[in-house]
Amino acid sequence: MAWMAWTVPTAIFFGVIACLLITFTILAIKYPETPRVGILRIETTRGDRLFITLLGSAFINLIWLGLEVAPQPYALLACLVWAAVVFRWV
Figure 1 (cartoon, rainbow, N blue to C red):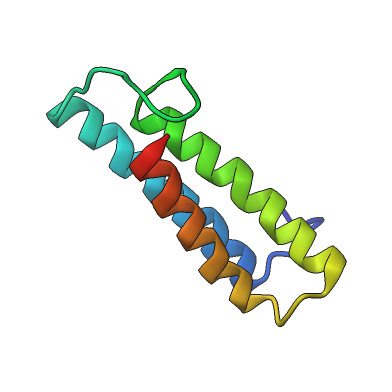
Figure 2: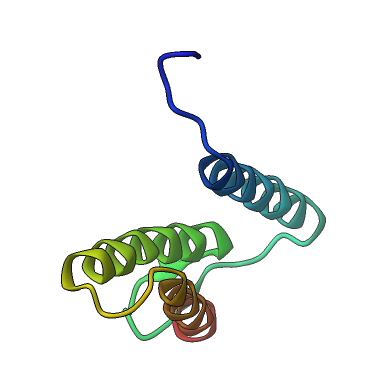
């Protein structure tokens, strides 16, 4: 994979995503859940909420970069708040 510029942040990013997927797979096996209806009025499971969180986090980071709101690491805080909101109410 010499064609791709792997940096430490990129490796950490993909490592975290892989760990999340593994964790959620183990949770689904050990503690099966029934879908619930949140503020979006659609049935969602843990995996659905993870997907919504990751998608929203991507948009938060893109907007953060585009508007140059503050240093990029602060976007992580916004993403963590977004994740808490999604997992609590969606």
